[in-house]
Length: 473
Image (cartoon, rainbow, N blue to C red; front, side, top):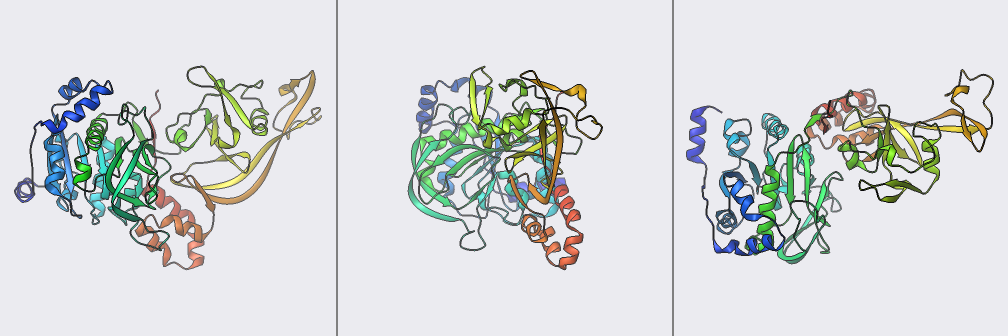
């Protein structure tokens, strides 16, 4: 942005700068003291904290909303109203802010602005999204991955999200150990609820509710690039704004989003190495944080050919947790494992190898088993092991030959942890998350679609990258 444009923007845009304390925060202080959180020291350390509040596209009670931040200790705020905010992502103007807080519901954003916003997240800018911001950018799929979900405004009655004003919402703390919610108890708030909205399975739950008109998960954290991201569904009007628990929640969310993560993320490439170990779920895979094989209780060595087939046969996997306590988990609940730079997922009761290519990966189901025979055959050249690899059990020699049964081709959606068929219809559904690619794909004839499936998968993956932790050298 040119300097003259920046000055014009500053004069044109509605800007508020304030920093004060009031007795309305007495309840917040008491809550923090009651939860043994060193509030005073934290505020002192963060007295220069600056946030940019992005609004626009949705009416709200301005005076009551900004009163939250006028009275929030240790915070300076400035407002930017859409569409001007979208033109600032690639400017040095953003450098002064520790956290961006979105209370907008805006739709228009061009390709350059999208790229600039993603670059900002790769740098590690902290983001807090509130309430109706979940409905922003309906045609930009990547925004759903950034915020961690979507309020769906179009489609069939079954697809569209719902809302209901003026209800009593019981809020439950889903993770009492997270810095945002630690020390907080369940509470009741008069607010608006959303129903039938989408939530990505990769988010970290913070808040839940049992209200029948609401989706269960109403607060979470997410990662995109190197940014810490928080979404809080609460916050419709002054009833919510004045709730001390809501104010405490916002303050702690801003504090947490501001802090840089120790783990730095990089875009995924085929050269990325997954750690050897057992991945219990998709979250463990995205964090590249498996359970080491050494913590699994077994009589077999993890490099033994029968290790995983024996583990699958059993209903439970016995292991030691990080504290050294013996624990068990259902075998069917294991997501997969990595060994020697190869990744396997459990499908159909078997571990099957998968090659991650990106958000959408072509998957050929090939169930590999190691059949046990009493003695090794005389000719071992066509088998997985040699006679030197014989494994002794009960003083009898056994031989493990590798048998692979080829299956059908499928598409694995790593973001949603879904497996679909490898056909033009299934790919068309996945591509709907990218409006431009979807429109281009839709006008092709079926024969052309079939010929270009791989091309569209690669283009989708290039436009919607995955991020994984940088591995220490």
